[in-house]
Amino acid sequence: MDYSPALMTDMYEYTMLDATLRDGTANRKCVFEVFTRHLPEGRRYGVVAGTGRILDLLERFHLDDEDLRFLADRHVVSPETIKWLENFHFSGSIKGYREGEMFFPNSPILQVEGTFGECTLLETLILSVLNYDSAVASAASRMVSAAKDRPCMDMGGRRTNEWAAVAAARAAVIGGFKGTANLLAAQMYGLKAIGTAAHCFTLVHDSEREAFASQIAALGENTTLLVDTFNIEEAVKTAVEVAGPQLGGIRIDSGDLASLAQRVRNQLDALGATNTKITVTNDLDEYALAALQTAPVDSYGVGTMLVTGSGAPTCAMVYKLTEREGADGVMQPVAKKSSHKATVPGRKLAYRSYEYNLATAEHVISGSEDKLAAFTPDEDWKDLLVDFVDHGTIDARYQGHDAIIAAHEYRAKALAELPIAAQSLMKGEPVISTETTVL
Image (tube, rainbow, N blue to C red; front, side, top):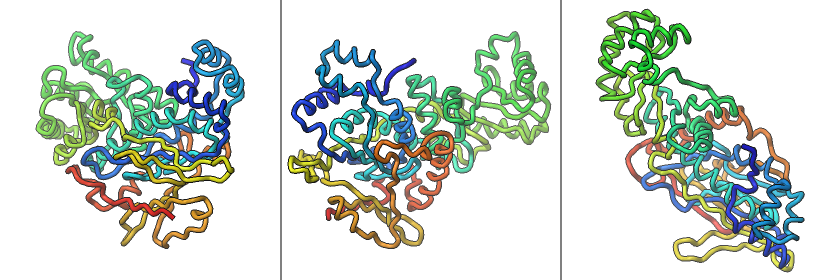
């Protein structure tokens, strides 16, 4: 489907643009910030994901003649604004936390700088991407920790919107997963694709033996056979008879997975299939994975709970104006003062401090551009912000397959630098505090 990311937004972004073009404030320089006021209840940390997708969408963030006609016919904006939009492209700058980075309440995850007109158009798209992708990556990271060294695979495509499935597969890999069943995600991002057969494949054949023989003939002895359509013990016996002891793997998708895995492991070993791997699926989440740590399972397939953020399908991120150019041309910090929704004025720097190679706090420094330029962090503070877009030019290092793999590896490193309580599945406060200083 051909569509413009510039219409993946709320109508009021365009009505605000229209009004500010009329009164002259659309060209005022502004700084917007993406942050969350709180993590999902009981979570110790979050994982940033989605920035690379935002950069991909930003490359296509323009309106063609059909899009402009739609806006004009619906009277969303004035003819003058239509003219302004004809050659629109984002010419501002974006910096923020890299994908795979840990985040906490009030972390300045993304900062967008440009004119009010161009920055306001990006709000809904940025939030929709970051909120969902980071929720999936955060859930995936918890699942990977619970699984220990056993690989987790994304099998959640059929449990969410078809486009969300692609985004979830990408975010899951950033969160620590090893591959996905979604072929479009595998094609678009160069991810490892996994999958063999479902129960219907067994049922369409006249016998389970014939189904297994057919799959092995097509995919080879290293394939994984689904053994819980009828009787698991009989299926395992048949699988080894058909494939031989060199059978690659079996999958169990129902029942008491821990006890079944133990019985199947013992049965496989008794049949001489000592190298045959066991994969389990069936509505797994991080708690189920933790419960399976002592079971002889080699890998996991995770679906529903992954693509729904394991109960936290959004990170509650917001996009707020923190600095704007005044009528005198001078940049001024601005902030909301609403009850329970107050914001910290000014553009931000972000650092993480360490002691004995473990993170101790998140440090957010707010102030004018001049004051921030003069600020000197402590020696043990790590700068968390990277530049993604410089005056309209996108840094391609944060796009594509290599960026996803780099984020996958970075997440593991960043998580290892947090106190060990971060990997606890018990509910608790963020594992490090966020300390904000206004210069």
